Length: 509
Image 1 (cartoon, rainbow, N blue to C red):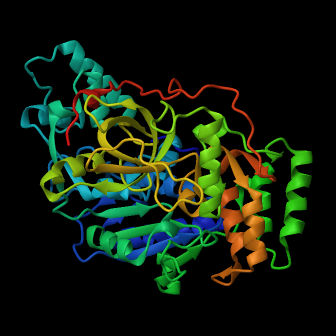
Image 2 (image 1 turned 120 degrees about the vertical axis):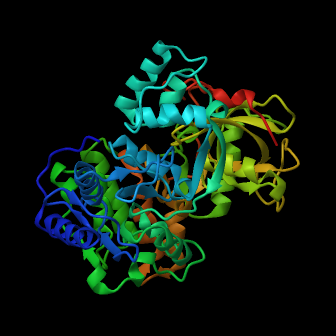
């Protein structure tokens, strides 16, 4: 794990000291890089909160780097190795595949909360390869694998620290070495949870059962989870268990997107004033743009962010119409959102396999084409570590002013999908894209409605979350118009490094 060697600010340093103190009480001494056996009772939870740009991710990465240097094993969910009494573990988690992939792109070995709940069951012969790669065993001799294949696996693992990726580099498919998935039976040790503003109280309780020591990283200015009381999980912790990062580090680089996000904290700021601020920023910096119409090409990989569900449905229909998509089928390259998995108990193993592979509710997926069996689809799960799979699919295309969605084709049971060319701002939390389109007329409607959430106008919370989804470019769309696509929908941009499309041949119910 490579993390930039940056100097911590005063508030980051204070938070680092508090975390180090908590970890020391749990038997992990960062200062002296020494470990003692895990304390079963644990040390509880601590929250580090701050707005976008306050350095939460940098602090998380630095702490993880220090823990690894001290001898703590980072658990990814791919493979965990033999349980030892003296072993100390760290899992770095995020609520969604996209949020985990954002961390991985910054050098932090993160996985999803759901993935850590289930552990893969390895074929004993191939588990010897995993043990060797992880430094827990001798180089094995495996029938059917040449020395060159093992060398490729070793080289891949040294660069990427992924057991499944290394196996794929050796020419193996998931079905060769993973025989199934099982619910985690043993607790882990230390958990870092990013984007913890998305957690509800029940999820926090589940995590506390798994991790005796839990560090939450979250943004108090984001939207509370849907169907919650309006409070975020970390707000239930005692005040002495919450640390606030105040300094906005990324603003030192004169980031106009973050400037706009933080301007929303002004209680006197109205929607019209804010929109003028966006226009001023667009004149001064190309990273902020005013869009007279929605860019239909960008929607294929970066959904338009809206508030109202009716707006979402109308934009999706306009997108499909602009690309000439037929009503009775999908075009390869169309984006989807997983809406859950509908499988009976007898197919529990298949359900666990799909969920462990990243196909969980809210996952962003690209349709690659029909599967070998009727009702099956080949899919690319965006942000997943092993993204390509085949699954029985129920695809629902919603239409304006119609209660029931149109279903172009479907299996009797399987993974359910909605179209993903536009999503609500609530659903976008935890994700980031290089360029983001925010549908301003919806935010204006929220401002006119006068709704308030957790003491702040709802439109401001919506605008803050939507704006901070943009990594490089913010496009503020001002009109109900859709631009014609300049490119044909396709899948050539979806690369899978060093991993074959293994599960295309493994369709099952």
